[in-house]
Amino acid sequence: MLHQLEHIASSVRHLFYPHTCRCCYREISNREQFICFNCLTELPFTDFASLENNPAEKIFYGRASIAAAMSLLYFTPASMVQHLIHQVKYKGQEKLAVYLGKLMGRDLLNSPRFPGLDLILPLPLFKNREKQRGYNQAALLGRGISEVLGIPILENTLKRVRSSPTQTKKSREERWQNVEGLFSIRNPAELKNKSILLVDDVVTTGATLDACSSAILEIKDTRLYVCTLAFAMQ
Image (cartoon, rainbow, N blue to C red; front, side, top):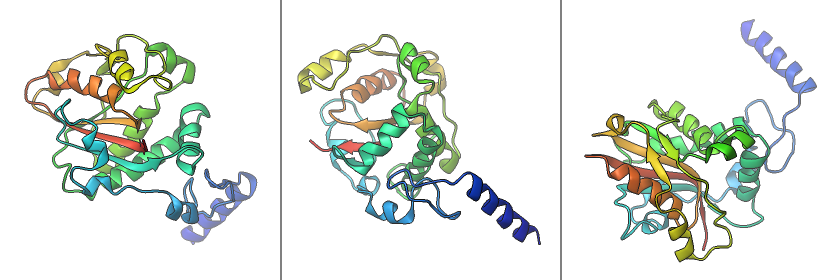
C-alpha cells in the first residue's frame, strides 16, 4: 500500500512538474535522473579511471607529482558534454552538477588506482566570480563524489588569491605563466599525511590544476589525485 501511494505521489509530481533530460530535453521517467538512459549511452565516457598513463595524467608529466588522474568524459565543442557543462556553470543547474559528481564517484569507486582517499578538495573560484555565479561548480561535483565515496569535502581550504584573466585565447605557455602563485592553503596542517582528491570541471592544458597541485604538494607527506568531469580534446 505504501509503495502504491509513493508511486501515485511521484506520478502527480511528474504531471504538474514534468522533468526532462538535460541533454535531449525529452521527458524522462521516474527511474531516470537528469539524463535519460538513451543519452547516457551516447555520452563519451573515457575509462581513464582504470587506465594508467591516460591522457589526463600525461598532462602533468614533468610538472606536479600526481599519483593518478582521471576524467569522466571527453569534451568537444558543440557536444552534449559541452552543453551539460554550460548548464552547470552558467544556468544554475546545481543538482545536475551533484548528479554528475556521483557519476564521477562511481568511476573512482570501481577503480583500484584511487585507493585510500581521505578527503576531497574542489578547485576554488575567485571570490567575486563565485559570488556572481552563486556557487562553485567544482564544489558541487565534489559533493556528489563525497556522497558516493563517503569521504569529506573541504570547500574552504583552498583559496584563489587573485583573479586570473580567461585562459581561452592564451597559448599553452601563457596559460602556465598566467596561474603562477594563484593558490594558497588556509590550514595546511589538516592536509598533512593525507591522500587528497583535487576536483575540477574540465582539464585542457592542466595549467590551473598544476598550480593548485603545486601548492598542495608543498605540504609534507601529501599524496595527490586529480579528477575532472571532462577532458578537453586537443
